[in-house]
Image (cartoon, rainbow, N blue to C red; front, side, top):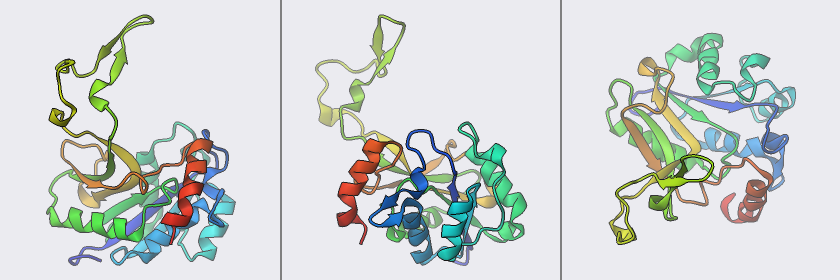
Length: 234
């Protein structure tokens, strides 16, 4: 709880994954990948309840061992490659009767293992401090450090063009505005005003560093995570 507002954390984890097989249960620093998200949520000072939405019996077994509440099993139709995360949230609301008792929802995915309880609490503090109205949401991001202002878009099979037509060869990098990319680590909303979209007209952001933002979607990502684990998972 923070400023008399009750917070529920929904952790979402499918059995199947396309980019990297069984990624949610691959072992990172001796523990299943999902363990690190369970740990961060449990160590938060402000989260009042943590629940899991999954279709995997094995992930449920891990969750129960770590004393994470699993109030339902996600139906197969909501665990497909094209399943909407917003349908998953709606399913959780309908199938966990206590959901309506909470003021804020924080959604977590297992694929960003270096997001810590400190990140969660700092993001929640920022969201509450903003005195959110209507459909304001918060999304965690990382700063794009490469030359994003030179991004090009394909026009047809032979030609491309600049996404930003104002860019010229004379533009200095320091004169170009900063750009950010969602890192998949943290999503927060006010439950009463949430309309099934975290990307609203008014999105608050929580900035995370590049290492903490590692999002595991491929073997390359997982190998990178393994090299960073000893330093970041303390």
